[in-house]
Amino acid sequence: MSKTPLTVRGAEQLRAELNRLKSEDRPGVIRAIAEAREHGDLKENAEYHAAREQQGFIEGRIADIEAKLANAQIIDVTRLPATGKVVFGVTVVLEAEEDGEEKTYQIVGEDEADIKAGLISVQSPMARALIGKEEGDAVDVQAPGGQRAYEIVEVRYE
Image (cartoon, rainbow, N blue to C red):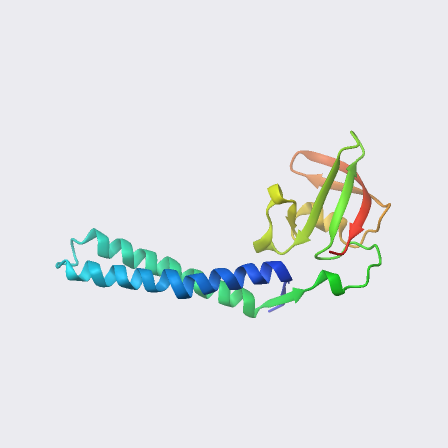
């Protein structure tokens, strides 16, 4: 199985979530199950069934995060040579050719993506069009809203 790219910040966020799930959420749901068992008949105990379902979600998320971290290739962009080329983890400033509007995006792993925060997945059409290009290059992106043309104004390794 190939490694999945992840930024340092993304790996830290996953580790923090994993720690919270193991140290707070898991013990909390175990207490809830114990309390629900004390109420008697488990067949008709909605609290018990809800707590068991919550436990399943927590255990599934823990397994998911552990697998992602085990399979992650953590990339520290600040240690990469600043060649001006767009690679995973860089921050790219684009200028739309049609209206001159500037947009700034950082190319991140799938789990880190948040378009409202300017974080785009390395798997997105925008990132795939940008990877390998350099400052000053023109880029055509096939977006859901149609073909868009941009110029790469700046590539930052931060």
